[in-house]
Length: 85
Image: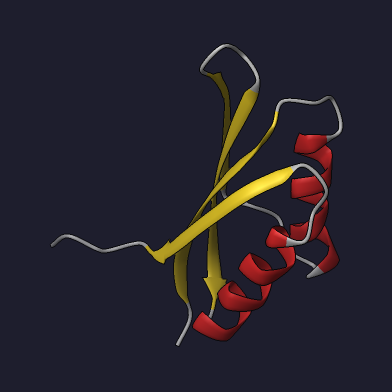
């Protein structure tokens, strides 16, 4: 079953961090629904929030594992987006 997944990536705030993270989604033939980026702390950390719909749990897990291997990425959290009725 496909649904929307949210990924939160913490990376070193270097110029190549954002394109490297977004490239992972491109490698899987996906275009994120939403992407939000913010420098935090003393500006040394970049937090990248990405929402991706129409993928299943296996695809989300593969994307998260690939994100962990990206240069400058320090951590990855991901979860299925809950729907509120």
